[in-house]
Length: 202
Image (cartoon, rainbow, N blue to C red; front, side, top):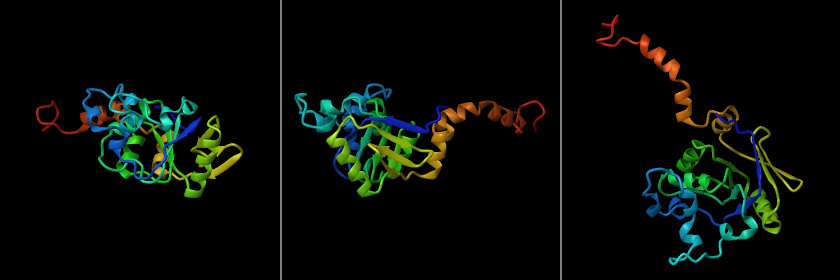
């Protein structure tokens, strides 16, 4: 699996606290067989009127097109446990989020698909948001090894659960891939286990 040590890119601030998963991806867009295509519905009801006309929203702002990092507030991803929400963010091209805090289940779902979520202290986050709003071309680096966020000559300490940080650094963030990689060991263990009907078993 891919090891994730640093992510560098432009950022886009999405204002507001306690943004729940229904705002991130309205439930009616979850009627899909795969997660493909969910990215175009990210924050759909906040970005588009019922007739499809774009509303003023940072994700509709041309200055932020191509951004890879979302800047969010506190309790981001609260509400339902839908894994479609982080999938929509990932499939819209984002690789990481920097926020004040994240809902527990959202954080777990995001980590499992390689979407890095790190926290900054409120003052440090506000300074980063103001810098990006003043200059949307600002490059932001999330350095998981050094535990810092760097931008425009500034540096701020980031917080992330240590188990998640290690999983990204060691390339063990996808539990399904990890299970598939362990298939030979699982089969070997299975052959050693007693099994009724198998030759040599009781």
